[in-house]
Length: 385
Image 1 (cartoon, helix red, strand yellow):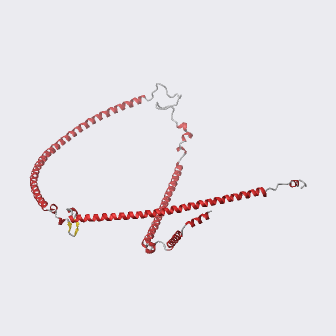
Image 2: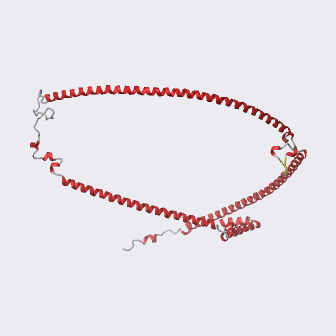
Image 3: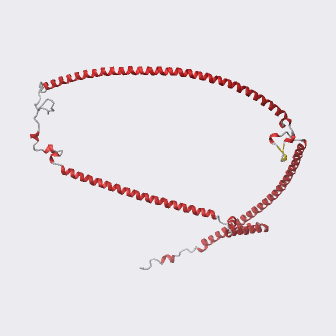
């Protein structure tokens, strides 16, 4: 059925269309062959960019050189770190070895009497102990019957020591008060001398300040007088200068080309047809008429161009309408052919279905109709086999 459709589509093409398709196929094949053998036109005519290739090669060499330098730097850094780690390990091992030597020497100088637990295993512990009670400041265990209420063995020594302390404290207090009084007198005398010196300096500074202020006022007055006189002279000169400038400006304004509007000054001297932008005084009657004539000519040309475009649009519209009608006609013919083809295919399928149905009926009703007889069943079970 697909072969029939392709044959029908080919049959619908006109000879001119078939020729156009063949020409398009040959052109495409020629273009592909040209691109395959000749390549890019720019590369074929100009050739390779040798400077760009050399720059790329140099850039790759620079990259490789930089990578080698980086790898060499990293290798040197790893060697330096390995050497540093080796020195640190040697120093660590030397410190451990020195520590073991010092520990061994210290252990050799130790005796059993210098051990921390010697008091627990000393055989002369009882002989070396002090009597049970020597004074009241000892800490005794409970129920030892070593201290009773009312006893004070160190009363005399304690009272004598307290009196000595009170006497020493009183002497120290008296000496401190005497030193404080002397220190206060010395501070007051020094402060009085400092205040006297400060007052003398302040008087001198005040006198210098007054004299400096009077001198400053005198100089300021003289300067102000000079400035006032200079200001009066400057103002008089400025008024005279302004009067002269005003007269000159009036004279220039009355006689300038801007005010007189001289037309010979509105054109550039090296190009008379060009106007000076900042000195333009309008156009003459001939120039205005030339512009109007040019505008009229441009309007006529625009009208003619629009008429030509409208005519071309009408022609194109007629051609498009004709083309549309041709396309609709061909589409209708194609639809009629497809409809006729579908009808033909449907008829063929109906014929095939009837043939298949007759074939099944023949096989079921004629070929497969032999039923087994009594002799077929009686042949079984007649022997011992």
